[in-house]
Amino acid sequence: MEELAVVRGQKGLELTVSSVERDAGGFLTIKGKLENTSDSAAAISSQTSGDETEVMKHGSSFGGATLVDAVGKKRYYVLRDTDGRPLTTTGVSVLSPKATAAVFLQFPAPPTSTTEVSFQLPTFEPATLKLS
Image (cartoon, rainbow, N blue to C red; front, side, top):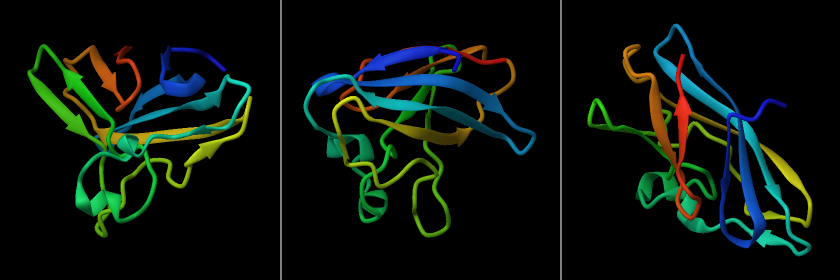
């Protein structure tokens, strides 16, 4: 798996971003894996779900993630379906020691002139992602 970025969170959690893809429909999909590098179980902070009531009622998710386009001065939020569910991995609340979980997040795609964004997930350090 290619590593485009590795962001570290609390309690030994690491998110490895392996792909960032624009599609013809105007979406940007980020894929990767979340790994617990520690020797004890790690709870995923509820902060990663964000603080929107509509998203929170659907359980644990990565709905609090954002992309920041500093040049375009714009912030992009994880997309939601018509029922308010975030278009991202859901249901991951605890990872066993050394365990991994596949992760995806879908955002509105920034303009094609945007070549990089800052990926931000609550409780994790930010990372710069190159867009093609």
